[in-house]
Amino acid sequence: MDRAQLADFLRTRRESLSPEDVGLPRGSRRRTGGLRREEVAALSGMSTDYYTRIEQQRGSHPSEQILAALARGMHLSLDERDHLFRLAGHPAPERVRRSDHVDAGLMRILDRLSDTPAMVIGPLGETLLQTPPAVALFGNETEFEGLERYAPFRFFTRKQNRNLYPEEDRSLRGRQFAADLRTALARDGAGSRAQEVVDALLARSAEFAAIWAEHEVGRKHSQLKRLIHPEVGELEVYCQTLYDIEQLQGLLVFTATPGTPSYEKLQLLSVIGAQILGS
Image 1 (cartoon, helix red, strand yellow):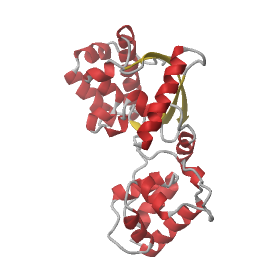
Image 2: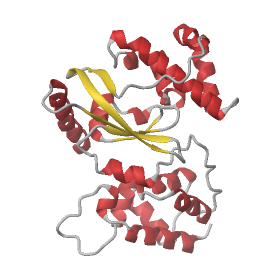
Image 3: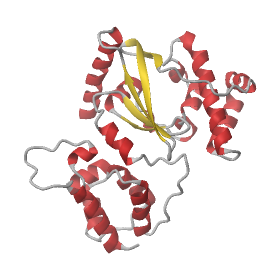
């Protein structure tokens, strides 16, 4: 661990960021550029005192979990993240396609969609980041652990996730999830996380096993989706996706046609999302 270089790297990255870079308001009293230490700490989910000690070359050896949180909070690129880990005396994380590190560009876009349901998902449908309106629309999907992190697994094993779609749409959604898993398995191979999800679903879901046996591939997702929300009822939304090819991550943005009931319901959920953010 190179405490001096680690501290200097974090300080220079912090000072190079503007509040707008990480989705924070600038405020009228800010006199200098860069982020404050307390802002970096809040973005990274740690105390200001803990972060300050790292910058002052004091304190304990940061864990890999702490470093990953700092990389995400400070919107580091993959190269910057790897450098951060090495300075702290840890090997750089493997750049596997299921990495939870979200590209800084995707994070900057997401920060500017604070009033819109939007989320970043990984290659197996794991939700990595959500805007508050997306939490209001889908619930907090970043809290799941284990196999439940993956949307196909939740769809076939959790009633709550199936109920997100109208009953007449569930067969189509199930086939799309199965086709997505087959594509992921062909890409990642035996022994991969995709294989783990498939094996678990074959053991737990007769519906999935029957669909899987049909060996269907290449089923496209429609941009128009019908969703059922427990508070506002049924919505018709359009899902636009921006992909990060290197990380195989997607930024999903949900909109509705202006003037429709679904548009009004999304507006209401944006208010609910703002309340979640302020709570």
